[in-house]
Image (cartoon, rainbow, N blue to C red; front, side):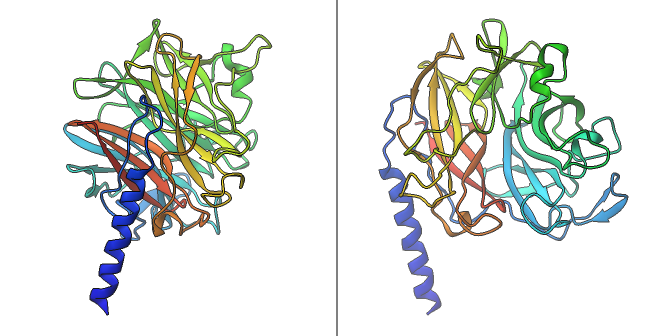
Length: 374
């Protein structure tokens, strides 16, 4: 019986992999196809790690509830994943405190994790933005000088120290991925004050392949970031720390894309991992949420799409995929805090002609899919 069940599971996994390949990349500029090398999470919750929380003044099991929504970057030859970890202090989605953990891998599948989180709410100048909700959903890029920048959701969950319930994109920098200097909200400057006061999350800095890995790059003398949860918008920066939204003629952030009726992204379009500057243009991978319009996936499911933008004009949309290229298929992508199904893409690394796409599943685990460009 055990042998038969194992054989059935293997056959099912092969069929899923074949189905993924069968979903043709309908545009020649798209990355993929991405194939799952394993049928299980690469990072899962654990109760074996303890952390003294300076904000709560208590030792707790900081990644015992859920580990998901990861960023990824290359460092010293390793694939490094920075993932959101929840401590189980609440009783459902959005009620726990989140911190960011670090894991390293030689093969992109088997990871060694740090025992302590590397980014978390503290008794610092950012506490009003981060406590009690925490540091969520990171994206990471390497700057041209080797400095790393992490962009994450700051969420105070309406605590007594905070001004409101708004979520904001925060930024921190590091030279080693372990020790981070927080710089506060990315729009905390006089030019961006209107955007600063509106809830915002999700960032995707434009990168290019340099020395065999992805590095943030300038276009027309500026760094560029796609950002936004409901709709995708655009911002620019000189230093990867202070950002300024691109505004339309009416003075509001310009819309690059937004949800489409009848599609997998009919409820939400949210930025995914760092965008990539290619010969054909800027490729942005994004997350879409299904309002029920697409009957090939569950109502409420998160799947991933891609868009192409002009390499000389980051605001100019050139093309958009007709449907998702990656969607919930395996059991662990449909079980957990969010059983409707989730492949929430946030991490992308290029390593030796292979692209590793890291994603959160069901708000509970971290998965990986791989695309070989040769």
